[in-house]
Image (cartoon, rainbow, N blue to C red; front, side):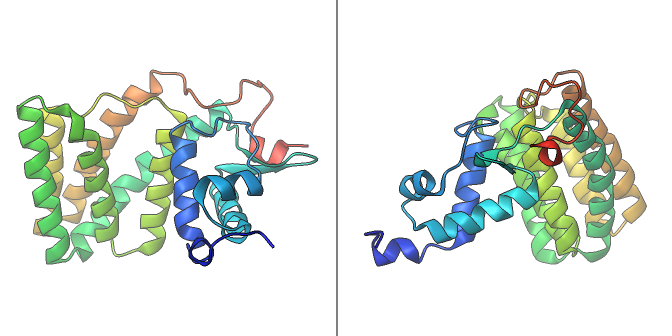
Length: 232
């Protein structure tokens, strides 16, 4: 018997998965570190069953890898994998914006416009503390507005992994939020081609900052092409 309370066992695996993922992105679980079910269960106050399920999900997402004789460990992506993620996001974000222009709801538009107003206000007054979260919510809402759960899930996963592998880029200035406003306007008008083009420019401007930097969360092994499949 584990001695765990009944309440702990009822915490769903998805909540445990989110908690572990957030801690990996935050660097609490460093790349290459072991992730033992017993230790994680104690940390998050759950049984080992949801931890086991969460680790399987995180392995499918590329945050965790399983090593022989070591078990589950935080993945150590290569520089090439990190660079590829930027290219993938550059392709997916414009597609998501175009789909959102075709499929968004009034509720999506209300949220997008509210986030733009808040972002412009915070940027104008130099209140940068909330801008990164606001930008994340804007892009997440836009992905949800695409009406494609698969596309939204891919975009969310790519953005999380970029946040994990790269040091945070400078938060958006006023002109960045003007770009967000233009994208939201194109989405509201149902102008898919314009939304796609505006998002392509906006995304490339953002990712250019990352491309000038070496990713901070990667394997230094020059031979590693895909460390998640190259483990012994």
